[in-house]
Length: 255
Image (cartoon, rainbow, N blue to C red):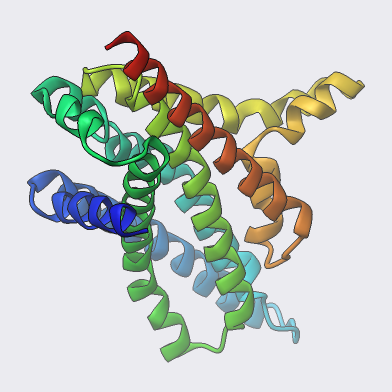
């Protein structure tokens, strides 16, 4: 555990020691801020129109604001996750420090867990930026906080899943651009798997759709916590980290 924490602190500090980490945070803050402004503007405009038309029932803030925002954040993650994971192992290989890391008295699983946990923590910090905008909803409205927490849990689980695969891809190359491109391709593929059921309803299509991260995030965005979705994310996280450990073991054998 001590080795994991040491690697975790080193990696987490590196995100805030360079301009890349702050660029990722700034990019997310600007894009989410725009989405938040558009969603709330549409909600307010539709509310005024409902009142003018004499409709007595209140509009659901979660369906009009929170859920679309969470789905948009999920899409933004496809772009920022490759930037978070691209340097984890690729930079170590490029700079030559991977040899020092591999010869140190640290197990492969400790290296992988330390780096992945640091990446996941940084991603959680990025997500926390969006909470600053949501505060305005509680100041000027009365949204239900429980579905929001469930949605954020879904975002964190989905991000941790994709970060695990990004960590594995970074361990395969010394080029950060290739690592980022490969991670984006995998993230996008896991996203669009869900589209298969739009034109196919056979068993194989349902299986492919079940593998999509989008399929399992939609219940979270609605504020629904389902154990099968949690199990899916935990299983895919384990698979990504397992593949990364095997990749490091093969590197030791080649050395």
